[in-house]
Amino acid sequence: MDPTIKDFEAAIGELENIVKKLEEGDLPLEKSLELYERGVQLSRYCHRQLEEAERRIEILDERGELKPAPQTLANPGAGPAQQENANRVDRERSELAQATRRLACAST
Image (cartoon, rainbow, N blue to C red; front, side):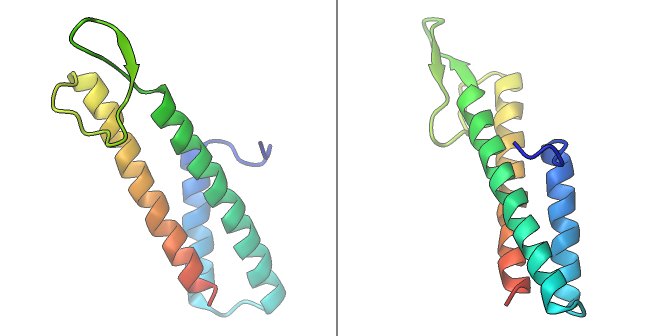
């Protein structure tokens, strides 16, 4: 892990700032490339963090046995805490996807 990345929220915030700077378009080429490389690094970090969060979410089934969360995290039978965790992961995945798309568009 890159020691300059504090946590998921900080990485998303930095990624958003990079996207804004690239979208403005008034940077020298070398600086744009540096920012783009950092953005890709942050995006990969965030994707890894979300994948890890999804693996850690566990839901109790009817018999009280632990089982991994299903691919689609929305589960009507999940308790409020499990559903909130699933919703948070979904929101963060959506924010990351949006920032990643904007990063790709800003670099063209």
